[in-house]
Length: 262
Image (cartoon, rainbow, N blue to C red; front, side):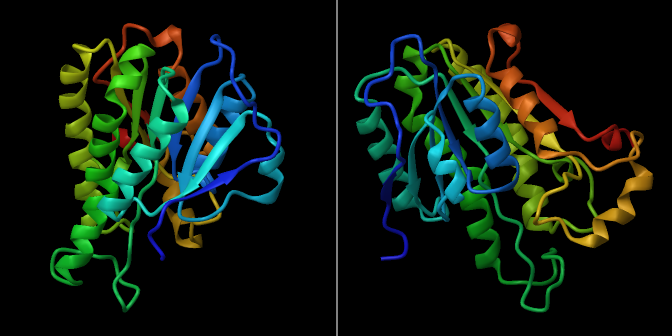
């Protein structure tokens, strides 16, 4: 069954973490920003629980801090609820210190066009919002108790495209990210009652395997005159999950090289 949640036990995972170990749940972990963020957190001793539609690369299975990976399609709401239940079972009452909502999709039409307001099936819009907007909300709710126990943080990965019309990002993706930015602010107020901080990171043009050559055209518009790297994003995410940002909530950090200023 394509949408069934399955568990992948990674070799070398610690059987029972010490109370001092901090735990992060991250979605969309198999490549790009998500994969770089896993590496960044692991190097700093976090215990890591992830999910994606694909399995993590083989070399990552040797990471002793990457405790669990669950294969799940968060565009399927029932599967998202199963993922929440399974992770809470794995936590077994232990606190959660960070939730990073990174999984997202930006589809094209059947003609490889930007999915805009005048083309594409409305059903495609619904699936984009299910993954990019509703899944972060459902996960935040589902892990609220564990996050409160850990006085944890939520970081939503938004986008520069959520703040201005982007030449390549489709309208469904852009509006879903704009909605996620607004949701971040609302969550920050509601989750503050639990002692949980909620922030967002808005990447600009980040150099990953998924980036097409056409994005090179945007480099002259970037004040720092380069594409960003997944590590640039990962370090900002980690800072928002660290004590150094303990008085920061409801904030969106632009990791764009200054591109958002124009």
